[in-house]
Length: 200
Image 1 (spheres, rainbow, N blue to C red):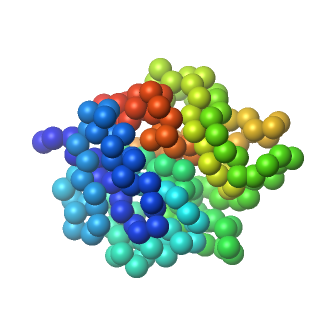
Image 2: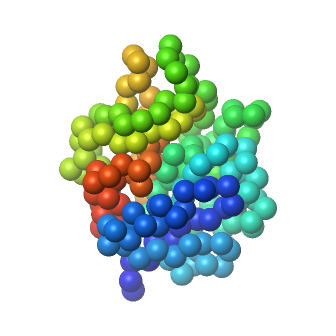
């Protein structure tokens, strides 16, 4: 069976086009997922994310993808990107309290840092626990754009420092992977990350 990557389309996540192009550049075959039935026809999942935690969860509910995605993400290799990583958490605090997919025991809270928020631009990742997704990417720079961070203590793979504040920039729990940065905007390092994901 071919290695088809399902890209979850849930309305507000407006970076689908650039992620699709980046995965294809890395040699992957992409199928955009609009319905829960389509989840069965792919081997891996990518959950993109631009916008707010609350909107993302509402859109997933509205599209009918929510429950099916929860189930699929427990068995298929799944990569959450930026907000896509954040919604893997139990709870988000953007515009009030919102329940996440609850696939990783974590909470999403505002970044409290003595500097400009959102944290935007290229920044280095510090891999604290090696895994196949970040293989060969230790100390690479990736593109970030976020005001919220995932607070988790057990699944941390990489940290990033912003003006003296360290936050989680990558997570892994079994088949679930999350990155706070945007690989699709991170040039060669991002393509390499997608290659690693394709090869998982």
